[in-house]
Length: 369
Figure 1 (cartoon, rainbow, N blue to C red):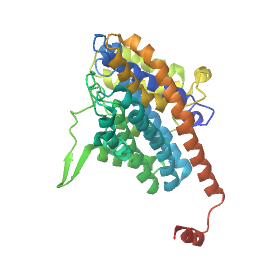
Figure 2: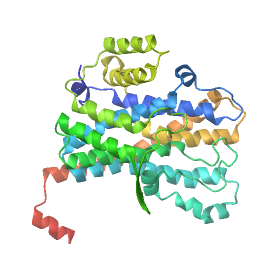
Figure 3: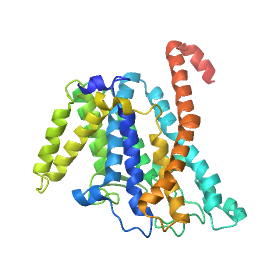
Figure 4: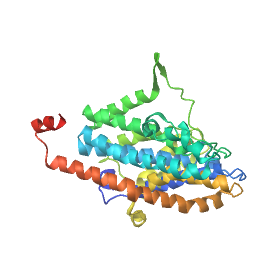
């Protein structure tokens, strides 16, 4: 099977990959949340550079690079692309912020509720634009002040602005007509790498190179590069052949060279191919979930784990995860069934009607006025 075949709607396990990635992020956080549990991520110890959580994030970005590029290539419309991207991210994040403000905050704040709801800090969390664009996390007054992750409501939010910036790369590349050829996608990725490497400061205006020694805690690489790798894979989708024998060969090569300087790059190559194999092999098709709870697990996992750590700091990471898991699943299911899927369904139906019945230019101008 090649990647092009796997991209067909019923020919892949991509929802399963996203679900596993979200679970890995939650499981990785479990090792960090409980203050009296000395256990550490075994994969991080074995590899020496990345752990379960970072691999989950890398998988998200890799799949997103493939699928978001495919989305623009299919739509060939900047407005439709933007509408779908907004529908995918913003409603779920808005729902999460409301849940944090009106459920988590009142339950766990050390302040009187009158002071909690009177605080400007409480209502700042409704600014989802800053969450999606500027890495501003959710902080509620008096909430989780004594946890190991002090006052942090949803740590994984830091990756969303990175995702949005990657969407902008695809959008600009699509508008410039670069996504219709391999050479164009290569140029788009080159542009993305420049944007990744250069820091722009506006007041005062200043250009500088990124400090490549700075990475997120527990990460040895950058998620954005996996997204751009996904863009390249999409452009070569007819030539990327995926099979279990090749995946096994990559794994064996990594194990042979795991104690050498080549271990880390070989691991990432093996990891990327392993994700592609997991996302395409028919052997796993029966495990593909009917509903996509992955984003909800990503959003609500951390706050539920923080809640358990606040009320039961004596639990170990396994016990805490077992307690948190039903609440994570319940919140993720509610997010999908009552927010994410209805918004996506409405948006796709609206866009389909606009494509099927285009409005004449004069009528569109009149409607705008």
